[in-house]
Every structure is written in C-alpha cells, then in structure tokens.
Length: 581
View 1 (cartoon, rainbow, N blue to C red):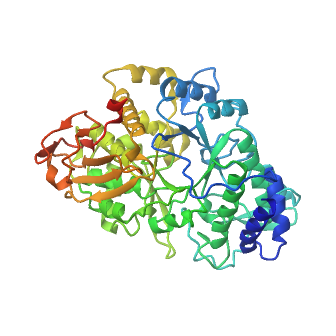
View 2 (tube, helix red, strand yellow):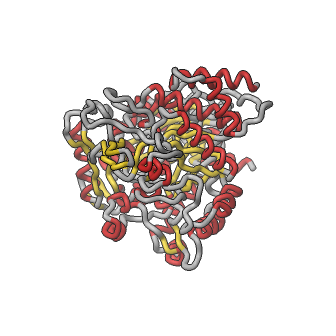
View 3 (cartoon, rainbow, N blue to C red):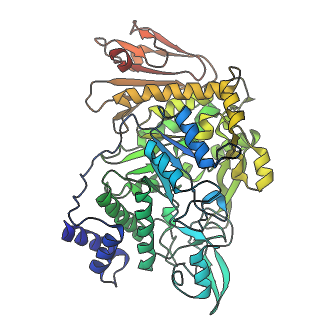
C-alpha cells in the first residue's frame, strides 16, 4: 500500500508544487502523519454517519461555573443534559488566541489555559465524536511563527503570504472591507502581508511546502487527542495568486484532497468538513468527486429558511431544495440554522433578489440584528452577514413585526432542518433559546458577540427548570424532535428526498429510507395562519397505516384534510419505530 499511497499523493502534489520532487514530499507527509506502511485504503463511498448523528456547536466557555475551568463545566453540562441527544460536539477554537474569539490562533498545539487543558478535551472526546477547527488559512500576528517572520528566521520566515501594493488585486474576493495588505517592518525592511480577514489574522503561504508539513504535524496531534472531525476554516481562500480572485483556486481543492487522503489512511472513520461561506453552486464544488470534503456546510439554508418564516412564503426555499443535488454516498450536507457567526448573505446570491435581500436585512435589523458588509469588485458595499440570536431573528414577521408565535416559529425552523437530507448541527444557544446579548456587544465592540453569550450555569439550570421559561420549552421541544429523528431510518443523511408542491404557505418534502421500508412526509406550515392540506395531495399509500411522529396522532381518513396550526410541523410516517420496540 505504501507505494500506491505515495503515487496517489504525488499526483495531487504535482498540481500544487510542479517544480518539486513530489514523491519525496509525499513520503515526508506520510511519515509526518505516522501512517503505517500496511495501512489499508479507506472503503470508497462509505458513510461514516446515520440518522442517529446530531452535532452540537459550542464555544469552550458558553457555560461557566465559578472556580471551575470552562471545559470542565462544559463536559459536566453535556453529560447531565445532552449525552443521549447529540453524538458529536464541535468545540470552537480552544487554542490560545489574540482576536476573533479564537480564530486568530497563537499556538495550534496548546489549549488556552483559561479554558482548561488537553485532558479536558480528551475527556469530551471519550464521550462524543469531537470536531475541532483546523484554522488553516491564517494565523495570529502575535504567534511565534509570525514573530520569526519579522526576525527573518525559521520556523516562520517564509510561512506567510506577501504581495506588493502595486500588484493588481482588483479581482480578489473577500468577506471584509478592511485593507487586504498590512505593512510590517521586518529585520530586512518593510514587507506587506496578506490579511483576508484582519490585520491580526495573517494568511499563511502554502506555496511553501513546509507550511503543509507543519499542518500535517498539527493534524497528527489532534488525532492523538481524540479529534475525529476536522473543520477546515475559511479554506476557500487558502491558495493565492496575484491577478486572480484568490478563492476556490485549483490548488486549494488539491490541498483538501491531499489532507483527506492522508487523514483517512491514518484514521479511516475521520471526517473532513469544509467551511466555505459562498454562493450555493460554488459551495457544492467542495465535494469534489467524493474525494474532497466528506461534508459541506449548507450555507444557503439559514438565510433562506429564515426568509421563508418571516415572509410566510416558501417559494425560494422550495426552489433551492429542488436544485439541491443528492449527495453521493460517502458525502453529505451539514445542516444548520445558527452558529457562532452571523447569518451569511452571500449564499443567497442568485437565490433572492436584491429587494428581497434588503427586506430580510431590514426585518432582522428591526429585531436587533447588527449587519456587516463586504466590498465587491466594483468597490460597492453589500450586506455580508446579519448578527443576531436565532430566537430573536424569528420573533416576528416582515409584515407584522413581533408577534405571539416566536416559540412556534423557532421550533418549526428546527423541525424543518432536522428532517432534511444531511447531518443536523445545532448551536448551543439555539438549544437554550438564548436571545440577543447586547451587553456583550457593548463590552467587546464586536457585532458577532450578540450571539456568543456566556451562561452562568446556576442561572441556566434555573431557567431550564422553570416551567414558565421559554428556555425550558425550547430545550424540551428540540430534544424531543432530535430523539424522534434519531430513531427513524428515513432521516438517514443520505436517504432519498423529494420536494412536495403544496402551495407557498406549506413547505413539504418526502424522505424514504435507504432500504425503502419507511417513508416520512414532512409537512410544515410556515405561515402565521391556519392552513389546510388535502391528504390526497400528499398521495399516501392506502395500504399503509400513517402516524404523525411528532404528535402521535394516527391518520385514518386518507381522503380527509390535514389542519395545521401556525408554524406546526408534522412528520407523517408509515412506520413508528418507537411503537415497534
């Protein structure tokens, strides 16, 4: 197997480093990761997931207990409340950092001491599948590597990407309006480093193969600590060439293939997820030919689902779902509605009109959203991201403002997300029904902090125990929906999915298990009015018995009418696995 793996990697490496001895480099990478000489190739198109998999997204310090390290508190909270609900935990960057709440990493191989230590990380990895961020595009300007760049010594001397202010950079696509190049005085004079995101986040130079080797060392350490899911942060910007858009370049795709090939030969059930917050068609390219990402974030889902629920019209969500290609076996979508970042607007390009985008922005601004902007090639500024807690984003409608349906609308959003093809990932503040944190915005001066609250555990436990608290009700209802999903094979991430046509106020789709022995019709009223659905329009098979998995109600008259309250969701199935046990 050793020679075959070397040859496979060398072919990919030749695209990235055509002037190098790529077979020698391939062997270096294999040795660096510690791949055994008799390692078996991974099974092609093998699914490393099923309907039971649900991920939680959280910061290390989302739940705090006085006198206790946050990772210890997090582990205890997960054990007490979510051990039987979620299977995977995405702990957002837990490394020493200088800005961006962790995404400006100072040291990739350390745990930030304020959070805890590696033992705390491995403890969580022992109870859940652990996802960690490989912040691969950029590194902190306060890191040792960048300090060495300034001193002009190794390691770090040639680890960061540089350009000249006189270069034509007009085609560069960026998510920020800050200056792209930052002047830095080094031991041999002034240099201009490339900063896609901020002056404190300096882009790494993968044209230097030593940078690739360094990251393979980092990956080996993460694997040893129990990480099995790697989130490649901002990976679309990885390779730069002056005169190009510097996004989605072929070298970037080849580097993802290289990392996947290495990782899955070391740990066959490991998963690569690419974080590419870009328009829908561009995002799909990161599947490659089932040889790049195992999973891609479904970035168009959050803005389209929110737009659907605040307008009471599912036309665009339905059109998008019909265009969503089924993922090949061995690949899948990662579905989410909220995360540590805001609600991205770029993924709506080509899906919403400019007028519809502005209506969505204005609606969410009225619910407290802070909006960030990006600069286009023409120099114009366009909305890039809406920063808002999801519970507040869904507290009303575009036409009527805030109303009494916020809880129902919020649960409906998750019922839709949990039923779609793919693996669901739920942000901890969605599970908890957290609202806009204006105090954190004021304290930090960062708009994204509005959705990055830190709960004091005692207060949180009181809220979750209070029968009058919406936090308790959100937590209860979401956990119940997750429990139902996890039992039913028609919700497998790769099970068949077809879009139903039931009007603009009813968003529906059909899932069928991979063995074709279970069908589930997911019918959702996305409006603030009662809606009627003729069961004959759904075309239920008359020889089967049908039950709503959510309410437990059995459907007896298949020629009758289904009456849906505002924002009600039903999962009509010909099998209720819970009753068969």
